Image 1 (cartoon, one colour):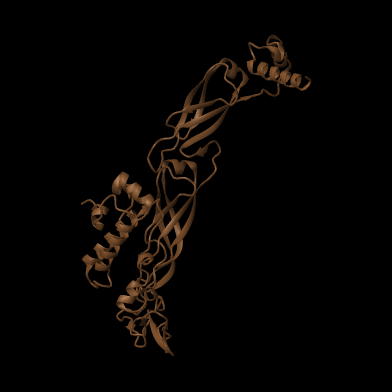
Image 2: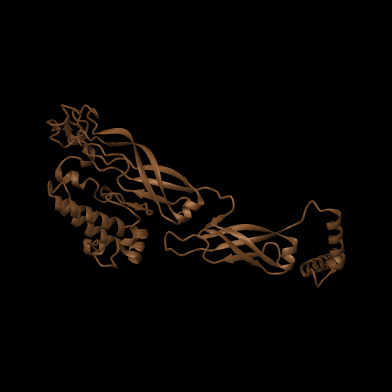
Length: 378
């Protein structure tokens, strides 16, 4: 079954402004938030669906992509609960609601369960891997949820108990004269719960430090400074809270032959003097093998030849770039006497720099130089 339309999930029109989207999200999130529907799996799933729709529509870049491509804009070979996305902006639930749930349900919820930290992994890949895509295996040191206690921090068979000092709120109120001051509970250190019988594996932390190995799919067309987000692959949260995200920062290594500019590839191709003058055919490299390039006669050094469709396919709109080959006429070296004689005879036949027919650019240049100095002496 396909995913529901994000606009329908929030109950807004496709022309809805940011203020309308926020308002709709707040209303639905209050209704289906897990704190208000404890144990209700359907409400939990509905809340996740609402949050996913909001995170896309509130971000202009994501929204534009969704309006153009639908859900396919965010499908990148992911499986199960791991989502890969080159879009990296996200809005945390707390950014909009602040402490509203703490006010409603008592205590500061963020003090008791804390989302795990986001992680960043710097990945170097070759130009070939960036253009064609690849799968990379990475090892990441991180905190993961303790599988012995399932993140609760309590020994198997037991569970954390509500703090009797703050009654599970994580905060206590102290009256000082005319004012009431809120401060952290000294008994539970803002957790709201006390672990009297801690897990012998994680020592009551609910998570353990370990290494994990992930397979990261690099989509074709990525470039330096692109980021790929892996949802929930960051550090595990405290007290069973949601894990953070992992961001894979891409750096494309410098290539021996090609340079990339957006979706086009550039390379310099040396040709000898004879081919530049008489023309011919050469083989030039591409990332898919060699192709033949016809060099017309009288080609000048620096001439740019475009080979269509041999560049990079854009990761955004899937348009294919081109390969641009700049020919450089190479001056012959290590000449023997016979070769020097022939070139000397050729030079004489061209009438040096005065040969307007054979060297028009030189003729124009030196005529311009002469006029310049003539003007100075007037």
